[in-house]
Length: 193
Image (cartoon, rainbow, N blue to C red; front, top):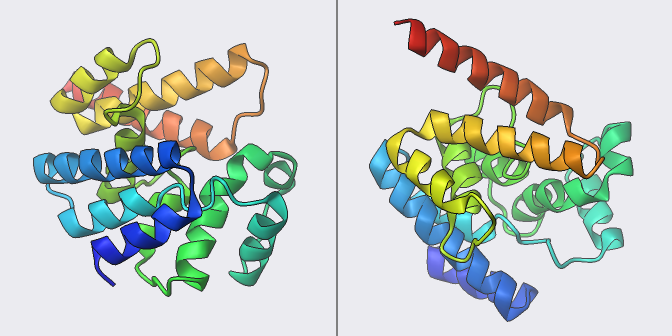
């Protein structure tokens, strides 16, 4: 399928505001992919599809996850805020027939991040933070960091996520901690050089 075909499918699955966000993430993902050398076509596709199940019922999300053979941890079962990324990855596999692991993982980990992120995963993670429709406190700083260094932006994004969730006393995914520790460690090595 082409990007336009995926866009048409997604438009029917969500409200106008969420669709606008998805288009903005895809646009930002393409820009970042060009800047940092990721696959531009994959970036656009993962960007437009990243929130494919965000407005899908929890029941349908859980069914998609089961159909894709994804086993949720106890924490994931109890934290339904994480489901849309996991069920989104399941949706693109089961319903759209996407087999590209990089696209699937970019969708699955776009909210939590993780250790060992591919270049495409980093691009989607940051594009979701910095898309044109985002207006949270600190977004301008995040955009500047993203234009300077993608790995630094990933560290900034994970730091923001951990601090925000901790402040609100919400569950923090282990993938986020492991990703943060990895990028923080790599950043410290980079500074020593």
